[in-house]
Length: 214
Image: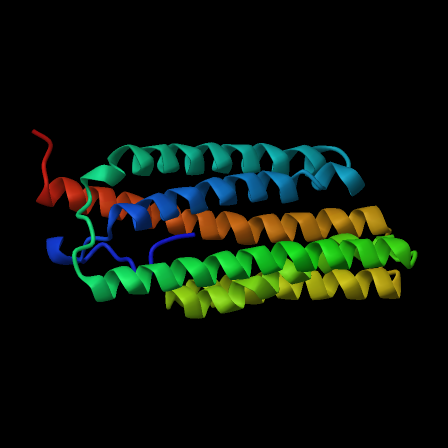
């Protein structure tokens, strides 16, 4: 989803390779889609400004993420290629671990949603899916050696747990709970997108200083 341990104080020798930059760009596109998708639950249980504003803000964030992704894709080829076999092998391991985690997340979401539907517990679907999303960020922290994933994981997991408790305890109407969980999860994915956007802009600024355009 993004580069491992990337920061803007790197030297030219430690600039990430093109594949890592493209991965970061791809992560931005994912966060753009997920943020809009989760925020789009706001109108499901809310009315008035509360149903519209989250979607508008999510679309604005998604456009910023998409613009950042385009900039990274455009300049990815200017980043230095990997020449160290050990570093190349490390990159492949990270890619495989990320792909496995992302694929497993999708599978678990499918199984959870199908199981809840078949057992007549559809009301729990949205917070249960949000719980899977939150939990999947924990291994990401280890894969990419970052702490931001732990913060995002904890936030989304807490939102999902509260949503499950709200449905079980009938604290509010189910549509309202779904809207709240959607907004909470959208805030998590948006925060992750902002993190990656800042990382990407920092990398491009560093690249321009070290490799000015001809």
